[in-house]
Length: 376
Ligand SMILES: Cc1ncc(COP(=O)(O)O)c(C=O)c1O
Image (tube, rainbow, N blue to C red; front, side, top):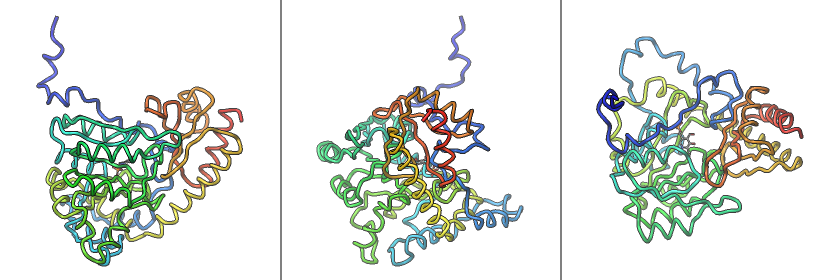
């Protein structure tokens, strides 16, 4: 018998050999109503499309230039009044890449990640590939509330290397008041505290406004040099496919996490799209308002029909079907062309489906399909 390993090439680090690749979006999603990955469901602003169209073919041959993009991010956050400087803005190939960089720069084998569960699925492989231990504290039931006391106690007793807070949390929508995030960050000055604010546009719970207000035009991160805030344009501005995300923090932190990325990880199309998207705040504001209006309508329908659901922050909610969730997921796809995400195997929410929120007409289409599949 030949040893299968003998033909597999050299083994990777032990942490990588035991790692399972993070399951990326499935293929074949185009043309369907995609309520499975919390993406913007209408696409980007026409100004973004126009900006990409004006990129000359010659530009494809040249490595990307980032001049002015950090300044554009700052302009979108209040400009010079924010007290932010370009060195405090890190550019990444999506927030996924920013997360990976945080773990890569900070997490050594045996170090500990403190976070909550259930939460965004990519934190775990990022910790595992570094050989880190994971302490994931369950949300409080009922209501999936943030386990503040447990997190605080753990931070005090045994400060971890990394604390990752997803606010609002994907997939439970759990919200944490910005003041409480800052309280936790202040408790553990030697811990890198990463606040994943991917969905903050849907709640307004960002730590940035209070940081900026407290700094009075000075460095907003001066009092919190261990805090890194992650922002993305994927879920609001409709450019998930182009991959761009930002990390905001002290210049020293941003520098450290940027050291572990390649020099041109963010491509020219993403740069052009991000500039145009940041300049068109009205588009994002209108989209967010539409999603929140759609949420209100759907939640009223769910209540009236007594469908078990959980809704809090973010452009998504959890639904518990009466039938087997895998069957409902499959029938929504096959019979109505609608994709939703099964939460099978996730602690506390096994048996639910996560449904992203889009526009009112899209959610009405979803609701009619749900009623047909669930016979209500
Ligand atoms: C909580 C959270 N963080 C980060 C990401 C990744 O975002 P990006 O598209 O910017 O890589 C996602 C995407 O689903 C997410 O839900």
